[in-house]
Structure formats: C-alpha cells, structure tokens
Image 1 (cartoon, rainbow, N blue to C red):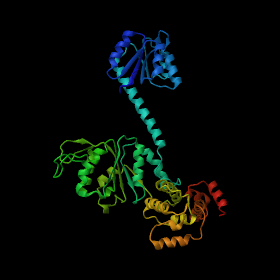
Image 2 (image 1 turned 90 degrees about the horizontal axis):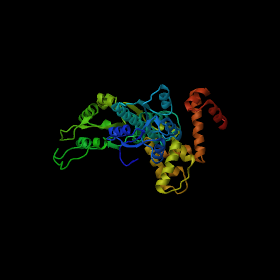
Image 3 (image 1 turned 45 degrees about the horizontal axis):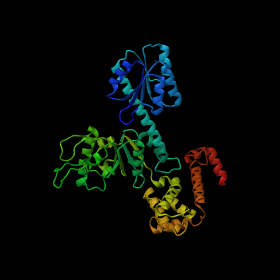
Image 4 (image 1 turned 30 degrees about the vertical axis):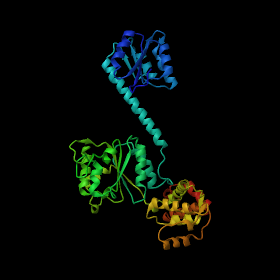
Length: 452
C-alpha cells in the first residue's frame, strides 16, 4: 500500500472482483486504495502497512471477515473498519460492532452514504488522535512557575491548562515583573496552535506607527510605504497574539481593535481587500482596566476578559521565595558556567523579608548578580544587591542572628508561618492548617519537629 501520498489509505477486502473494482473506482479520487480478495492476502498487506480504513466483507473464501477484525483488535492496531455483507443478520452486525467495526453496511451498497460515513469516521479518528497528541504534549510542558502548591498561583497553574486549548480570550493582570509574559508563553504552548506567539508591547511602540505595525500595509499606503508589509495580526495567523500593556492603547486604536475582534476581519492600511483575522488573543496589563479613571473602553474590556488571571505580587507569595531562589540559582549557574551550591540562611532571611517591588523579575536578577559575582560556592548576604542600601543594611542587621544552610533558612521561615497562622486563629490547629495548606496531621508533626 502506497503511503507516499497525502490521501488517507483504504483497503478493500472482498472476493467479488466486479464489486471491489466498482467500489475502488467510486472512492479513489479521495483515497489511496488497495484491495485483497481473501484473508490470506489481506494479512500479507497488513504486515507491511496498516491503512487508515478497511472496507471488509464478512464472507471470504478462506474464512470470516470477523476473524481479521478480531486479530486487529487483539494486536492493538485500530484502523477504521466498516463491515459489508450481502447476508446481514442481527447477530453478525452485533458481533462486528463488538469486535471493533464502526459501522455495518448491507449490499447492494448506498455508495454516497458509504463515502459520507467513511469521511466522517476518518475525520473523527484524526481529531481523536490530535486530542491524544495534545494531551501528551501538555503533560510534557513544564509550568513556568514554581510554587509551594497553595494560594492564587496554585489556582492559576490548575486553570491555565483547562482554558489553553479553547478560543476564549485571556486577560492577564498583575504588577510589572509578576510573570505575565511567561504565563502567556505557557498558555500558547499548551494551546496546540500551529502558529507562533507574536508579542506587541503597546507601551513601548510609538503611537504614530502602532496601527501600521498591527494591521500591516500595502505599497503606497502612505508616504514612505515603498513596499507592502506584513502586520502583527497576519504574523499571528493560526497562533496567538499577545498585546502586552494593552491599557496604553489610544482611544482610536482601541476602537479599531474592537472592530476586528467583533467582526473577525481587518484591512491592511491602504487596502480595500478584507482579510480574516485568525488568531487567539491574550492581553496583559498592570492596570485595573475596569476602573473608569484609566479611560479604557468598557466594550473592549468585556471583549478581552473571557478569562482573567490575576498574578499575585511576590510579597504576597513569600512561601515561594525559597523555591524560586533555588530555581534561579540553578539557572544562573548554567548561564554563567558557575558552581554556586547554596545560599546562606542569613542571605535567605534577607530575601524573605524584602518587599520585592520588582516582583519575580527583581528576584531573578538579584540571584543572577549574586551568582555572577560570588567569590565562594555559597551566596552570603554580602553578595546580595537589592533595594536602597540603607534598607539592605537594616535587613542584614535583622538577619545577623541566623546562620547556616538554605535548609535551615527554610525551616526558620516555616516556623514563622506556623506561628503566624496559629496567632491568627487563636490557636485553632484545624483553621491554622487550612491557612497553611497542609493537613492537621502535618501541622502536629511540624509543631513537634520545631518544639512549638
């Protein structure tokens, strides 16, 4: 069987030569067709290649077609199989379907119906394979964030894979440096879209050229347009368009973007030819676009916020700082060919107590700087550069009493969180465990471990 074409492959197994030839002629425009007139010949063909579909007669000179159906089922090879027979019985139909046939046709065949059904079954099979492949792909894609597994980040990491394959527009909100672009990249990876992720910074692109860059233009559209140019919408076809800091768009551009999202079409500048807008939209902002003070169109806001992810500030997820620190330590070691093995407890305490106005991005480059300039294989407080110098010195003095390894620093942070949770719940261990995101049994173990 020739697999060199792009057509789906079909094997006809029938000993009535005239019938097989007429069936082959009826479907060969759409399929790459081969045929066999016995079980033996069919088995020989199947040793070489498994077709996409088999049109199988029940009665053959050397046995029953059901035998071949059963063999395919047992081998785990599952092409689309449609059984055909001139001797239809309820029992044979039930048996065929039980052994894996998708349909059962009686002769003389309704060829048009057979062609329709065969096309639908193969389309469903292809779709099912794509879904399975996407599931495998999703499982292999590593989330861009590490987290202790509780709080808002846990919810984001759980919900993002659920909405990624859907066409719903997504709005990412959060302060600068919280990881909005990283999350957008992850969602695009999980989406299964074949096109690329195209990112536009609405804040940094000059307003007078934004529309020409977004929509593209044709030759002669304006003075200086010596040749046609592809716009970002066209580049994102079949993929994802990320509009970063969308709150910076002018009123006029907001109106034009809304028109594209509502109609699904757009025009290049200077062109009268209507084009389809085929992209998945993700937007990001560090503003509250629902606040009238930001002068963002209400109709556009409701059009882009199909799903909202609010990324928390780093100071609101302090339990993740040790995990992020370790991740950035490994990343920096690889980037600079260094071998810094650990971070001191004193340095870790400083990191934990700092407010991180630049969020994850600030932590990342703080660790990168420390690794790049470290003179020993452990980062100490002297290696850290963060915030105003006076604030840093104050943090160092506050941490002077603690020394030891990263493990000891993490234990110190755990103690502090447990004490805080117990204080907030006036000693109620069940409620404290809920706040901490651990079981009551784990909390009792920790209390015993730390003699609290």
